[in-house]
Image 1 (tube, helix red, strand yellow):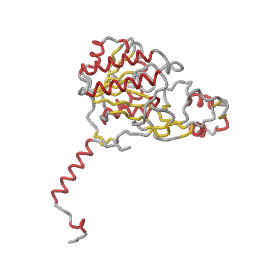
Image 2: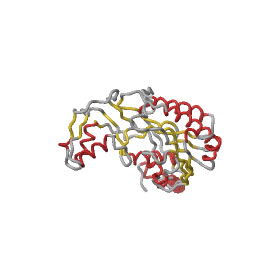
Image 3: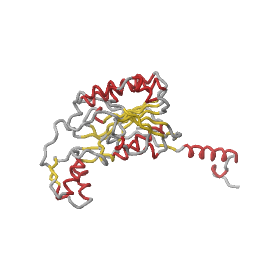
Image 4: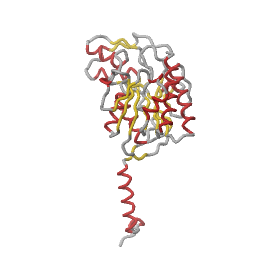
Length: 316
């Protein structure tokens, strides 16, 4: 897939939802590192979980918030990064709360337009795609198999059409298999690390599944960079590296020389677990604006000197 280089823009005023979540905390930190001004919309009493400084607005339930309050939250903002969603482990894939997230997200999008927001970045999932596949591009067919993925597809499809007639640049960041700081302890990597730390056997499936793992901190940086890149459309937030679950876990165990504590084949595969989920990155390279100016200046200087005879095989 071809990608084009995009020029970095000036710092922006960003409204971030989901700022206290697993992914949102890393987006927030990266936005601040990139020099953006960040406003967050969070639940009361959750400010202590923020990863960086921000202007704080509170809401008891973002997805049930009134339209005037959503418009007010978006006032004076250049970019909306919408990372909030219901993701309670063990429940979120088929939870009815996904429907509330869908309707509330549509209301937030309308509020962003009403307030004059010029850029909206939504967060999707690799499970929107038809699986399994070891080469998922943003043009791969979509076929969600859970309510969570179906509502994400519905939101993407609706907003793509809605924003097409508005002065809004719309981006949709599809997350692959993230791990790292802030991860729920029941997930794979924290489970394995806890077993190793306690010198207990980690009971695992055969580990033949192909996956695309990415550190959540890097994912946060990639999503935050879309603010400056201003790249529109669907974007895979992935490593592009195919690795079996077994090899990935063995790399973790090798850090402390404890591969003997990994017991593959002692746990069953989860029902419906796809054999392969691997992405193809299409995030455009970011060229600093200064580099563009420097290149233009060099070209102008060269043209002012006239042609170089040596380029045609001649010498003076």
